[in-house]
Length: 226
Image (tube, rainbow, N blue to C red; front, side, top):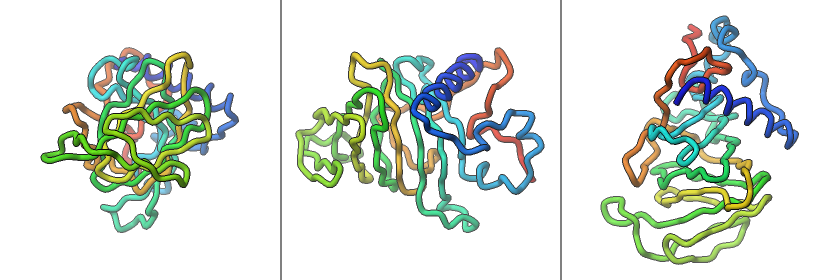
C-alpha cells in the first residue's frame, strides 16, 4: 500500500468516528514527530500494539480485501508486566471490502455492529487439519444460541453482536447498498503475530511504499521509547 493511501484512509476513519461521536484516546492523535519524544511512560502502547492499523492482508487490493482498525486497549499474555486480560477495537469496513476467512486458536471475541450498514458473516467449524468443516455451526448472538448450516450468512444489524469462540472460521463484509459499517470488538487479549489462522495463506500487515510522510504511525511502527 502507498503511504498516501494509508494517510487518506486514516483521515476518512477519523471523520467517520466524529460523525458517530466516538471520541478517541489522546495517543491516537500523536504525530510521528511527537512519538519520537515519547518515553517509557507510553511503553504499554508499543508493547501491546495499541493504535492505528490499516491492512490489505498483503494482497495489494485494499478496496476488495482490507480493513481499518484501532486497538484501543489490549493485554499481553506473553509479558508478565501486563495483567490486563481483555482487548477492545473499533473498525471501519467499507462496502466491497472483505475481512478474509480466519479463526483464532486462543481469542474469544464479541463483534458488535456499532452503526452504518449491516455486517454479513459466514461461519464454519474447524475440521480435520484446520479445514472447513461441513457441520452445523452454533451461533451465539446477543444472548441467543442457535445453529446454522456451515457457511451460512449471519447478518448483524446496527446494535447487534456476535460471539466468536476459538476455532470458528469467519469472514465478514458489508451488505451491498450501504457504504460502510462501524464495527466494535471486545475480546480476550489480541495477538496478531501468533493467533490468526487464515484459511488462505495471506499476510496480516501491509508492505508500505513511502510516497509521502506518515500522517499517523501504525501500531507496528512506533520508535523505541527506552
